[in-house]
Image (cartoon, rainbow, N blue to C red; front, side, top):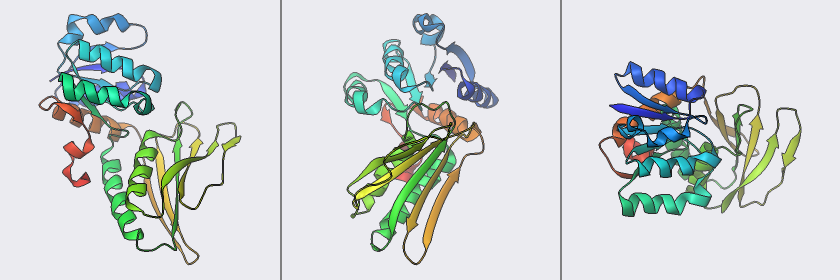
Amino acid sequence: MKIALIGYGKMGKEIERIARSRGHEIVSIIDVDNQADFGSDAFRSADVAIEFTNPQAAYGNYLRAFEAGVKVVSGSTGWLKEHGEDVRRLCAEEGNTLFWSSNFSLGVAVFSAVNRYIARIMNQFPEYDVMMEETHHVHKLDAPSGTAITLAEDIVKNLDRKARWVKGTLLAPDGTVSGNAQCAPDELPVNSVRRDEVPGIHTIRYESEADSITLTHDAKNRSGFALGAVLAAEYAATHTGLLTMEDLFPFLK
């Protein structure tokens, strides 16, 4: 398979390593200093482009890739609220393909399935309250993380006593705390921490007067995310439309 990379930071380089190890060819690498390459023959020859950039660049990257007739796998977050409807239209009505996930880690896929299952069980036990905390490296721009939002939305869907998730506190690298530590009883707070080079830690805690139940996924490095993104690219190469991890892993449905 021919793969183009959009974004060539630490994640892009790890995806390149994993893709080559699985026998794929990297035909184009686009970063901030060579945006004109979206129009190149090399980029157009790609079966799939894997995009990991930032919330400000992601949507524009999708449009450029679609214009070149290239399918996209993307792990960029923070764009969905503003551009989600248009991306859905581009895939549903104009024949484009985007495989998007807030987190491509295989471990997070399992963690997400367990999260939904536990939430359904805990719906029977209102004496337990629930909260979430996510920790990421200091370079991450959005908070809460896209993965935390996805996990929180799944809890809200399955826990009748929670109407919505809300941003909690943000602990910055310099130790300052912003945000709101208080929330209404029907709200699920999602707290954020930014420190060091942490790939990603997501913790969900159910708390009662008697005990607490804690679920945690702790990424050791970027290799799990990179492998998941390449597996998604392999899937997207033979499928069309707006695709998610539920398509790749049916146990998530």
